[in-house]
Image (tube, rainbow, N blue to C red; front, side, top):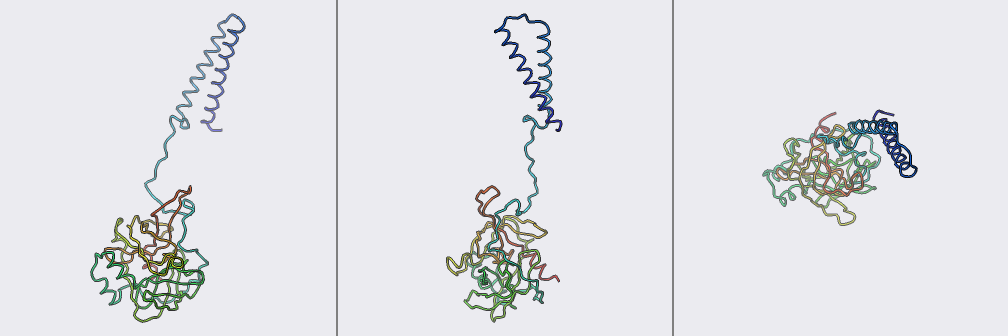
Length: 314
């Protein structure tokens, strides 16, 4: 038993003893006439002094209600973890990852000439951005379901989520113009929820990649993808929000956004409205807090800087 509990115990015992003593004295005084002597007052005084001293010591201890400190708020904010937010869910059900098959990928450097023309003038309106980006956004089908992805170069390199491709080594890719082509899963990230799909088709249009360091928190961003395509229709959708925060989790940079995303948005691009460059790969959202509190507007994308570092490393 620690000192604080000992003080509490002493205060309880002495206080109860003092109260009991005076109850007995008063009961006997008015029930059975007796002569009060000096020892009655001496005993009562000693008990009262002990009770007061014990009370003062207890009130001065850290465990007393009068001294208990409020929780100290930590200025550092960690990204949501499975322990703190157990209902943090991926936009698609994760499945067994494929083996990391490394092949030579064209570097995510310059966009194609067609992409250069589409993105020649920054500071897009939302409608202009949609028209410029949508040809590069694809829908990825597997036997387990579907998700989204986006083309990053004219060689047919598509970035998506690992949980979108699941355990499959080949997928079917539907392009924005309606073409359906076979895709091969060529690489997955061993830690991040990333995968590369390769396709071969003519006249592919890509989307440029931004530098997240140059996109400030508060910038307007747009999420592209195919949410709930099997339920509400196969059309690509867009949602607008802001870049809410830049976080680091498991050593990887993640972006928080208020742009609404839903199952099927996984693997789709999060695009900076001002420049038309991709800032992140959509992969997760939180819809319920630790105590079941409904949560809105907290969604996550893997930083595109992580993707570029991964693709250019071996």
